Image 1 (cartoon, rainbow, N blue to C red):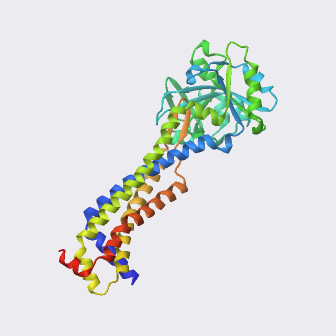
Image 2 (spheres, rainbow, N blue to C red; image 1 turned 45 degrees about the horizontal axis):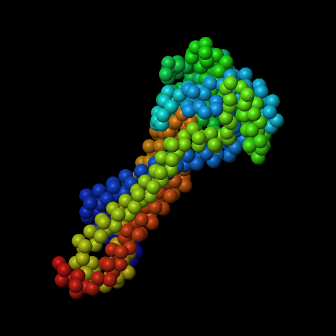
Image 3 (cartoon, rainbow, N blue to C red; image 1 turned 30 degrees about the vertical axis):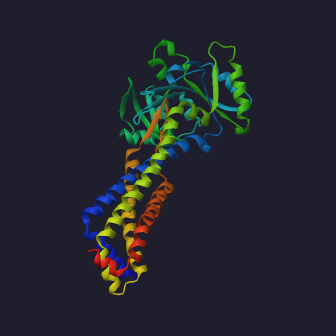
Length: 382
């Protein structure tokens, strides 16, 4: 019985191909946006809550506004390294081709090559070698997402903002967003900016042994340079990300409301289409009742039509979003910080669940109306 009802439901949906297709397309578009927004929200959570960065601090120039305005003496590194609880210090000079929010920003991080080759700051190479990186001043190792986005492979050369580098390797990283940037040699970025940049860095990445002593270590680092001409502000990696992208994070969190609106749009589209279908087939439903169909069967038919439209569009939109994010390797950058779009299985499941729930809700009232409609009145209305 259920099989025959499902066959009838499918024929009913296929009978109005244009209307069904347009409804499914509208639902797919809404679910595409919903998954895109949730992917961005996941990227924010990963960047600010990752366990991989809980023991990292960032020390940069006090009152700086973007990487270009932070200019610390490189000699600070040895003093920071002597602070109790500090495991390692990585002086870093940063160049970003666009300090403002951008989907196509490229960040160069200039670091001493021995820090990467010695394993102090481990990177997992999927191609190339660290020896090639250390052996050439203008070499770079590029994150997997950046390499995919720019179609780069080992041996290629590319130029950003006047810096021309050769790709010596491609790496992956556990640190969120790090696979969307490129590491170069510190001396290369310093020399390319002229003699005033020699011996100067943008920030220090400080690894500590005990995250529970973060506040204590931060205070000691900043106290070291309180009487210096150039003072520091040190923050945890999470706080640094939030500070550097504060306004952007506010906008990103606001997009969650747009995601909810997308779900409401799916509900409205499906409900409207199912309601119109029920109104168009009042006589047909009355005839089915005269043939012995119960109200519960009509209820099942209408709800299943709603689910087919909602789930069909939801699956199409979710798969399209997954494909776009996988092939696009998108990341949102601001002030040298990269936030990666992450479409996880939980987001996919959430999109499909939203489609299922909205399909049920949208079909409920029209289904009740169809199931309770008196046969005689239904026949007279046509």
